[in-house]
Length: 477
Image (cartoon, rainbow, N blue to C red; front, side):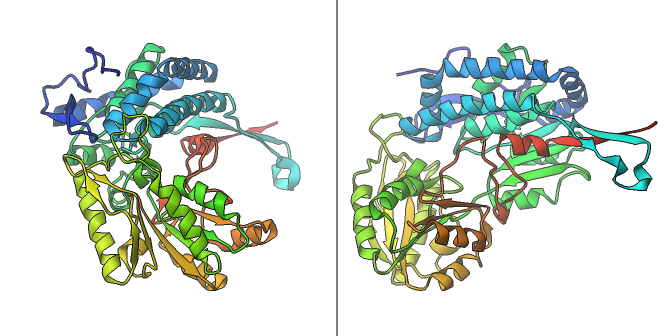
């Protein structure tokens, strides 16, 4: 078993601000103490931001790439420790936390590669008479200081994306990690500091909402990257300074459709992962499964059998498949939604069992025949709950899915690839996955939601495009 190093102090600033205890969601035990920033700290951070950006812009692409490669190497040597930290502070099962740590290494490496690919293009000027005797080309320039506000559910890899992309693009970055999972952020900050990043180019701060709002509203930031709840994100959009660009990554209620010709065994295996990975606390978790009525009972039996084999328990134990929810209030909310569905004639197949000293564990829960106006069908569950409903009219089901206010990821299971491709063009979704679950992702992919699910595009290359400006240079000869 690992322990946090004695030198680790989550004192993100030089202030004497108030502190709070950080408790593990696994057992409620103390992990460390986190110091909050004061107004003076926030003021100092803002005042030092222009100088930090100046320092970052002095670094050449190869220098940024070398720093990123050094950080990736450092993280690779700490995979097991980082996995334990992720499991301890965020409640992600150790086997999945280990995969996240490995992904974070790959993400930083991708950032290093893309740093060397940031390039403009030649503009063909003489396609019109007006462009005669002119040469024009574009270059990529850093957009400016980035404010990154992150979420708890991927406490290392999410910030690897936000911070890595910002630095790779030539921008300084100030990170506000989730208040429940700040340790991973601090460890990443230490890795960059040791790798020779300019002073203040990457800073971390923990602060209460009213002080974070001062950061959000500051004109010192040219770009804000926010990962979190839709309610907070869309309100934030109203508060940013004029000219500040913004990316928002929220959640959804990802649907999967299973046609009667699908490989049901493969579909059940994939969707178990999609529905219950990290206790469903994933923005693209498979929340709603629509199964053709001819194979509904067969699929339900296969899926339920696999679900029963999942173990609920502390995330730091190797055998755990489903860890705790991040806070007890989330369990209470989900139980209310489950009871609402049952009161409207939904059938509880299994689950809805709460356990743990803090009542923070909710067992894998399956409901069928859930009415479309229930919260579990209209809002993001963000927990280990999946609704499985039969359908017989594919066009009507597709039309229903296309009315959703969330647009993020969707999946289809079928052996008819031609039909799948036709459906892919007809379904309003940012990503359409064929024969795999909705939570499938590799870090070089474009990633983002539409409508209430988000704004802008993630994925290393795509996020870096958002964090740069295209500058045009024109020469008359």
